[in-house]
Structures are given as structure tokens and as C-alpha cells.
Image (cartoon, rainbow, N blue to C red):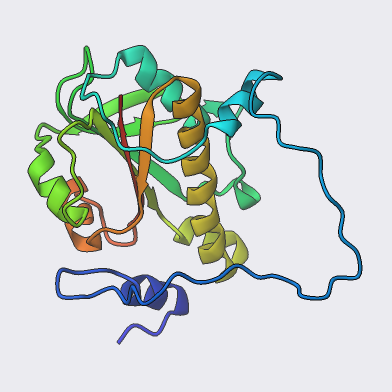
Length: 228
């Protein structure tokens, strides 16, 4: 039995085809019944203003609907938040440990052979590590999520031991936070480009790890379905 608390958490929170999600009820948001004071805020501005705020106004997860391919320029800009610039990346990382890795499953990307690629942030390059990009096994791993119109999958994985080396067990918390930072920025980039992006957080962990060929100690964090 695994005794390391961080590793035990990842093991116990894995999802396999034998498991069932509780799906009991949607939790309610916290509301204070008797606040000392209330303050109304100005109405949200959904149009106009800086481009970033226009993109934020339309930020929402969406599966691809058109089924068209992504261009290489689309892909480059989507990966911009993950790229290394002046020895830093476009998202926070406690202690600059960067426990995050990124993999691209290219299904329909112009100028890119279908296959599995590892993203190298320092050089902003893709290294092909697998020649198969069959959406069938990926759809099964994502609990039957339709990938018929997807152009690519971006899988963010975690190597929490990098953060643990600096922060002990708290590093496991930082690794999960980092995946959230990066995924949110890729979603924002997709909205700004007029593309569709959907974060699939529920998947069979061992199936995703097997499709990517992940080593021991590297865990799938989130799968972003990309397209038009």
C-alpha cells in the first residue's frame, strides 16, 4: 500500500472503467444571509474596451462544431501561454519548478503529420513521439466524449515531484494549481482566436497515460479538445 500522501491521493483519485461517479446533486454556492453591508458593482461591459476583456466576456468551454483543421499558426498561438520567454513561461509556477508537461495529439492540423507530440517550451517546438492519432481510443478514454470534429487534443500532465523537491507535500497542491493556470490561459487564447476549446477533466487515467506512454510519476491533469 502506498504510504506517501501525495502519491496516495493521485492513486485514489484515478478513474477506471470499473468506477462510477457519484453525480448526486449540484452543490450550492455559498451565500451570506446577513452581511454587514452590500455594495452593487457597475454593470459588466461585454463589448468594447481592451481586446483581452472582450475575449473574457465570451470565455466559455465549447466543443468543436465545424470539424475543420487548425493551421500551424493557430496551434502556435494556442501554445503561446506555455512557451518559455526569458526563462519564464506564461503562467505562474511556485518556485519556478514547472511540474507541467504538455502533449499534442494532432488529428487535423495543416502541415503537421497526425500523431502524438511532446511540446518543448524552451524552443517552442513539437517533438513527435508517436505516429498514431486514432480518435477512437481517445474518445473511450474520455468516457465517450465525441471527438468527431476535434482537430487536436492538448494534454497537460503533472510531475509533482518537481514541486515537492522545493515545497514538500504542498508541492502536490501547486502542481494541480499550475495545470489550472495553464488550461485557463489556453482556453482564453482559443476564444481570442475564434477557436473552440473544451477542458475534459473526467477521463480514465491509466488509458490516457497509456496512450501517451507516460512514465511512472507523471500523471494526466486535463485534456483540452481543440478545433473550430
